[in-house]
Each structure stands twice: as C-alpha cells, then as structure tokens.
Amino acid sequence: MLLGISIGTVSVPVIDIIKIIGAEIFRMAPNENIDPMYTNIVLNIRLPRVILAGLVGASLAIAGAAFQGLLRNPLADPYTLGVSSGASVGAVLTLFFSISIPVAGMFTLPLFSILFAFITIFLVLIFARQIDRSMKVETIILTGIIFSSFLGSLISLMIALTGEELRQIIGWLLGSVSMRGWAYIKIIFPFFIIGSLLLLINSRELNAMSFGEERAQHIGVNVQKRKMTILIAGSILTGAAVAVSGTIGFVGLVIPHLTRLLWGPDHRHLLPLSILTGGGFLILADLVARTIISPTELPIGVITALIGAPIFGLILMNRRKERRG
Image 1 (spheres, rainbow, N blue to C red):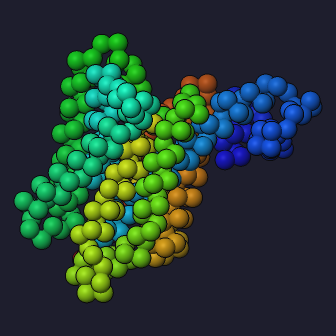
Image 2 (image 1 turned 30 degrees about the vertical axis):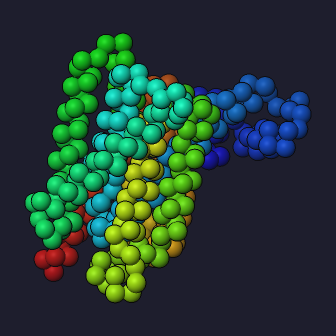
Image 3 (image 1 turned 90 degrees about the vertical axis):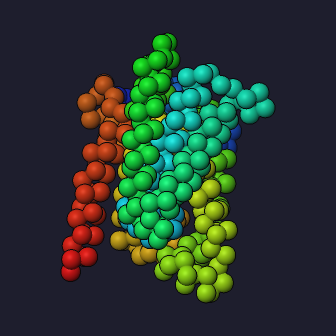
C-alpha cells in the first residue's frame, strides 16, 4: 500500500504519507511542513485507488480460493468458470440501458453484476450436468470457458450497437481502478464484507468438501446447502469486483494457487491469506500498469493476464504430468 501511494509521476515520501493519513484519521490539523499538493495526491487520488485495487484483488482471490476448494481443481476461478463474464454482461447491460433502481441508487451496478454472475454459475453447472452426469471438474471448466466466449460475444454486440457509451464501456471492460474515487470503495466494501464472511464461516466445510462430497456428507456436512452458500458468496464477491473495476482475469486463479503452495491447503488459513496476497498483488499490478510506460497508463487487466496466462499454462502442464505419472 505504501509503495502504491508513494510511487508515481510525483513521488511522495513515505514519512509524509504516514503523517497525512494519520492526520486525516485522527482529525488533526494538517502538518504545515507537508506540501498541500502531497496531501491532495494522497487523500484524493492515490489512497482511494490503492484501497480499491486491494479490495478488488482480495475479492477475486478469496472467491477463486473458494471455487478451487469446492470443485477440487486449481484451474477453477471466477474467470475460467464464466462468472466474471456473467458479471460483465450484467454491468454492461446496466451501462448500456442506463438502468437505475431508485431504491438501490449507486448499488444498481453491483446488484446487476452479482445477479448475472449468480445466474451464469448456475447455468454453467446445469449445462455441465447435462453433458456429464458425474460432473467432472474438467467438464465444468470447459463449460465455463464456452459460456465466457458466448457472453463475450454478447458484450461485443452491445458495444457494436452503442453510441456515446462506447468509450465508457470499453474503458470499463479493459479493467482499471484509476480515477474511481471513494464512491467506488463505498460500492464494493459492503459486498466484500458479506461475501468474505460467508466464505470464512464455511472454511471448515470447504476443507471437508475438498476430499469429495460423499466424504463430507458422511461427517455431517449439509453439502447442498454449503455448496449453494459458497457459490452465492463467490458470485457476490466477483460481481461487486467486476462492477467497480471491469474484467480483471487470472487473479482468482494465480493467487490462491501460489498461496496454497506456500502455506498449505487448509481453508481456515488459505482464505484469509488469499485476501492479503490478492489485495497486495493487485496493488502492485496497478502500480506497474501506471508506471511502466508513464505517463501512459496500461489497463490493469493487461498486467494480470501477462502474469496469469503463463502460470495457468504451467498449472495445466503439471496436472497432465501428474496424471501420466
């Protein structure tokens, strides 16, 4: 977080960042020795951006860890299961038709994203069951990729039909946390808390289900109820993250996998650690995106894809080798 706030076109000393944030938290008078420009950069530009990147990364990482545990496969994540694409369709429809629910206000966008994310994961599971009654994980992931492609074509169709909203939709689809401000943190934060708590409460059940649904049932886990809760929580987290930042791929795939390699598969530790590592990873990815070819800014989704796609390939190759061995 300190690196993300400090580094940029204008470098802000770390000690000044601590003083500025401390003064804001404790409602103290601003330090006269600190340049007012630094205060403006930290509080109005970089701090909200870093917090938003952290929340998005944490949401996608814990959702990915839960999906991987539930489906017992390190290739499962919101992106490969089509959940991110479903959430994107919901958000693009909201932007395309300028939908606003009077009661929901600014929460209209994440609510539609969550709804479509939830519908997508259930359609993926129903379709996978029709193809393969045993519901092999490979079938579910392939079905998710099929749905992602189909939903991507729907988004392309809406972009082709749109007029003035074109730039807003394309900019949003590329994935970014720039110039979002505190309003977007208020949008994602309640959904992040709800989704994360639901998954953390079910960490023991995820441990049981990672050995197979039958075994989990034998030790007293209500598999259907817990599975539904985990899918709902994952959809809430993914939908809210996509609503505020656009489609950012591979965070939910790479971070839980690396966290599992470093600290083990116990979901009581894996889920909270995925929150921390996912948040940290996306903050650093955003830092790279805005500084690597400064002053031009890359979409954050480009950086995560450049890192995530090769790791996705390595995981797939390792799984093939394990099966042959």
